[in-house]
Image (cartoon, rainbow over all chains, first blue to last red; front, side, top):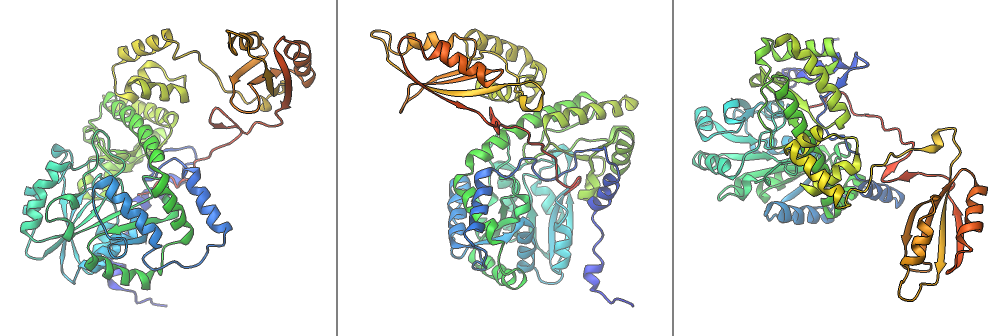
Length: 386
Length: 160
């Protein structure tokens, strides 16, 4: 039978990560540093709350936007952590992970042909989600010399009269780069000048090292044009619960809600109960995990530098993004050769966009023992390039 | 740095100064100096290995003993406490609030050995009013670590 499928959906290329995943899974003894999620279990008091909700038989749909109690907890959290006020009744939407929020925001903002600026390297779903929403993704290759921060000049270079939205994802996956207040102020001026909407993916906001995360929505003139994407996956080690949320002006949120109510109905009820507990009583767990990541971050950056690979200091998330250009290999060749010769899996930078060429993403969401062993092997691998 | 250093070695006392310096982002010599200072100040009192004896063929019995005593004039609980905690069989020893005075954790090779210790040495001590011995049947968790918990990394090997 000949299947006549959607042209837009069929045009989406397979994930670069997926291809590499298939190779790694064939190697039983490989040490993987390729995982984009925490190694910690969800803290027990949060899991226990989920279990309790099941015991109580709380297994029904919730309101489409998510339980009001949860939205109120999120609103308080946003105020406490980021000094941002959002009305839980109209400006917060509970989604199925941050990923759904990205899709909803794009579908809400875009008309066919609208251009969306995507600084790369970046999380893998922005590009396809823009295309699926009928928009045109325009990538801005970020520069290592700027520590992979986005500059006003770069936006100016890529903006056109069709540009409608810019996606920001800082702290960044895969580079670990952050944008501090000065960096954000510089780009906010250009965003205002060109009257762009902002989708700010702040899923790693809790994981910054040395300085507190600043949300672009706190800058003057930004909140009214920004949808923040956040969630519980990274900060509370809750990836499998699929708990995300968006915060933004009611005009965006209510339209996103309409798509969400028909596509999803509501986020999983058990996860919502667990998320309430996380928002209210999870600060210490976040601090504990962040301390552990920070220790590993120091170790991994130091280890890469000592085997002769340039590695800029990532100030957020749980990734390092070392440059492998000196080996003369492409990112994919490096990853494949390292896997074959030393059985260590890292993700080629190109899985996160063409501008990731020359780099590899290494996750440090692993125990120190695993990291030590993996970095020893990478050290051995690098001996041939000294 | 002190708090971070203590938390790191409390979890893993095998970390050497090189590792600790990198993890904490400090100078190796400073780490060594700080550890030595804290040892002198009796903040670091020793290094301990957590062993799950249930997984060996060696017999080990642990008992928790509640002890009521009469505090002594001018000495409070300290004098009688010292007479108890100096026994080598006593592994942990705490002064408590509530219904009894001391918690004594005793380890022995058999229940009989522990019972003998209580009967021959602990209970007859002057000032000891009563003892209640509870034997540990199974240790699930010690020093924050779940014993026998084989943690497998169940994450998919590569994810975005």
